[in-house]
Length: 296
Image (tube, rainbow, N blue to C red; front, side, top):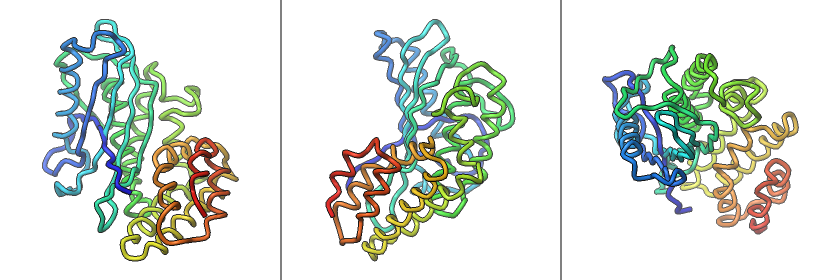
């Protein structure tokens, strides 16, 4: 597995005194507008890049090599003066122990992203108060990145970050922007954090920990054991799927992990993967073409 996974992220003014947590590659793509060379798009990209990389989001001390690689690609579909219609693709990854490989952790294509922006305006984040939809959407995803990453290193390690994402969601519901409320569809920011914080989905967070710490992180020393742990994690996902079929949380997981899972079970030491493939076809049929490539 030699893919390089990038990450793009956004920032708001918060706390100083600790090392920044994110290593951000941010792109504002305005080709769909037919006016991608308009200065405001370049200014927006530059401000948001600084906003992410120069902001501290937690009270943890991150060493430079510990910063989370992430990416956010904002695609502008249309704009009128200071109102922008867009989508944002958010991805993050984390290194696998004793290897040069980075594993994808978070992958969310957020299609409900309308915001107001005036060139050179101050971007301010208040953890307990609404400022703008631009800031709310970006900071929501930042805390999702932090929470998902922390869950891969420690069981339920992302609690404090998910709670902040939920706080952002709660105070952003006062406005009329989409993605923050139950009625905004089954693949929204609301649904994602609601799933993660629900006791019904507590097994998902166990999977995030076991898949990474007991699976990927031991493969340098014992590849077969690592593969078996990942197979067990997939079995746990099937049990969760049986209780709550077709959950958005499962969709986000496989959007990030499908390529990796295909590679893991198509190479290396042999394990009994008949049940694994059966489980994958049940819980993620969208990726059936990838599961067919797994040889066993």
